[in-house]
Image (tube, rainbow, N blue to C red; front, side, top):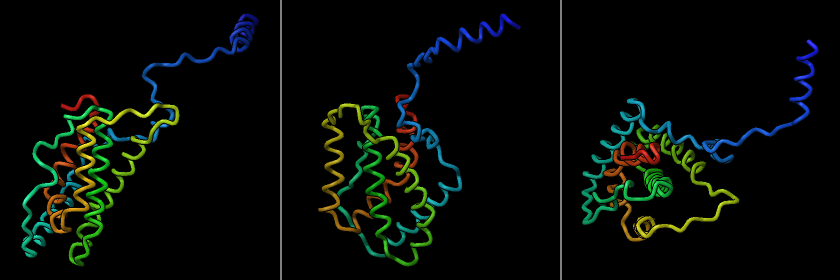
Length: 190
């Protein structure tokens, strides 16, 4: 017993600090939970399918005819640096939310309720992941990301609301399945 007391006194007297591990996340990253979005549950995807179908039908009735696509086929987050992907997705989500929240057709409001709730949640999680570290130097934005962000900003000014609705609706499942999964997968996005 005396030996155990002596050993305990020696060990507590040294007050050794724990060895930092290289795999430890930065302190602000504890609120970043984007990995949970690698796949969405079937019920959520079904709510998005129902909303997408309703919006497309509504746009057909309005006879919307747009000459260009805001999100071309070449839009692929894999082309960006890993640390830039969340920022691109966040901008894509922000535009999608803005467009869908501004849809005023009373028949669409209840159908969009669940998808909007899900998109807001994903957007808030991404904000926690893209907050700049107070001690970190800001990284320069690549030309590709800069062009993409500029394209999203310009579209809001130049495109008609109907064409924005059409573009966002057409891009919805790519955003939910491919882009979100890519960001959630981090450097393992392939």
